[in-house]
Image (cartoon, rainbow, N blue to C red):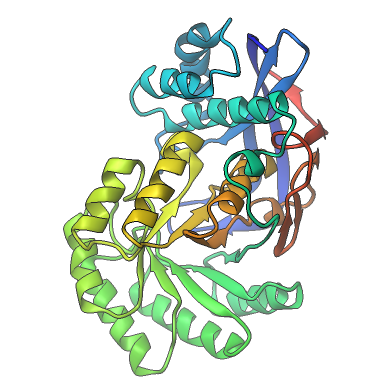
Amino acid sequence: MKITNIRFAKLTVPLVTPFKTALRTVTNIDDLVVIIETDNGEVGYGAAPATPLITGDTHGSVMTAIDTVIKPLLIGRDIGELSELTNIVQSALIKNTSAKAAVEIALFDLWGKLYQAPLYKLLGGGCSQLKTDITISIDNIDKMISDSQKALAQGFDILKIKIGKDIHQDIERVKNIYQAVKGKALIRLDVNQGWTAKQTVFTIQKLDAVGVELELIEQPVRADDLAGMRYVTERVSTPIMADESAFGPKEVIELITTGAADIINIKLMKTGGLSNAIKIADICQTYHVDCMIGCMLEGSIGVAAAAHLAASKSNVITKIDLDGPALGQYDPVHGGVNFNLANISLGDGAGLGIERIDGLVDL
């Protein structure tokens, strides 16, 4: 099975509710779909959202990186040489992690089709049933409580609360949401780099004092402030998770060995795809550090690949944050992984198992 072409399409899904963080507000899931064609008629699907504030990638930059640099290196190569193909992708150019991720997802999809097996089984097997948390966007307290209660009614029992704009308002948000869902759901806080190290310690102490119990706090300080992450981790008992601070294996090793984080959040758009994500999971297992598998605001193509990885590495990927498809008004991707609110089911189809995609617009 040899690669003959790589082309692009766009896929847009409106959100049920606008997605609000400390960094942005979004109303649609907008994916750039990467389609790798082969000489036997099989195609592999990958995808990437535009995340200029996180990875620095836009759809335009992803397309240019793939079309002008990565694609010429892959045309004519055999899908069976997966290790060599991922080495080519990772060494083709620096950074551009979303472009690399989209290509790798499509390559792994084809690899599964080559051997006629679901991707998670080829990666090591595991349980085909996962359960994700759901993101509660930052808003006024009443709206956030209402969104939290709606999520509970839909069967979610882990809430990831977006905060990080104003520390005093954040404290009030968390206190009120916690009282509204106490005993019904676990609370994760995602600060999106919105606080300083001292503000983080202050906030956790304030929440501890009124009995708020948190499962974890995600990326409270700037991505490049590893000293600040370590300052917080050393002073609080609430687990601190690195997200934007943890892109690749080297950064993860530094975070772990310096004591800057208790948990690592793996996202394929940060790691540059599955090959580095697998390395990170193995590093964390070596150091006895748990991982979360997360996603950007993206649809079910890229998130399906993340779900397959989570199933195959469930001994170390113990936390699931793959709610992207659940935030959309519908899922245009048929076959493969089924995203049903909190419940994620991996099918038996080869690779990602995708049968068809509605609404693709060729680019």
